Length: 350
Image (cartoon, rainbow, N blue to C red):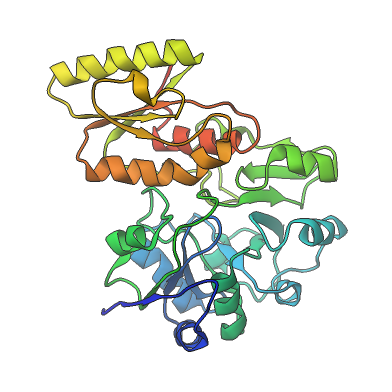
């Protein structure tokens, strides 16, 4: 398959390119496009065969449900039995934006989308290109991250090209993703509502708006194999680079000392070492390839650089990546969720 690559300026959108992408979607093809979270791989959501192409292109397990993306609330009505009052309030407050809502699905949603569950995950992305593609296609769009399943999610078009070139009809290059981590997934079919995956909308923001909010136990622990996941990113190893990842967790001074010690040991064994540090610590490492994820005082910068950092160290050919843990507050919860899954829960506490 020949893949068309289109560069589109989100501030000066060429509607002809958007319409070409929309036409591909309507005809059952695959289009990778930017969102504010990560790049998504889109297919016509209510077309079973089109959605099946997503699973084939990504090598995605069939019991891993997809998120359906919409361009307005009217699109949601055809996907769910009803929109709960709480969901409407959350849409008014956080849409368009990085919040996915899980609601009871309508009969029109194919089982391939929901992995056989009676619920469907829906969100409205806060990115002008994504919104315009969905709007011009006139259909809801199923769109997981546009990468090979299990790999770090793509935050730039080059990441999509690395993974999916010649596997999809079109890739839209719309620049770097702003948030850099996937959306928060909130189940509103239970009371209190439950976060199944942390993301760009934080636990603190939801609590301030909703009140009581639960967190699924799988967010920071390994998921049980015999349980059906209700949200993407819950069950399988995700976000993993080719290199082994080890998280070092504790106070900053102890973390740095342990990483230096481990790095020296690996180098002695002939293993190339990558280190994911922060602006506050990057100068303390003298061994290995050091990448700063961002400022500890601004966890949003770390979130936006995590997947890029993992892919960058992979491209450097390292055999092991030693990563500093960050604080769990705010978007740090989402960062640590992704880090732990990337590491396969290989954590050294100091």
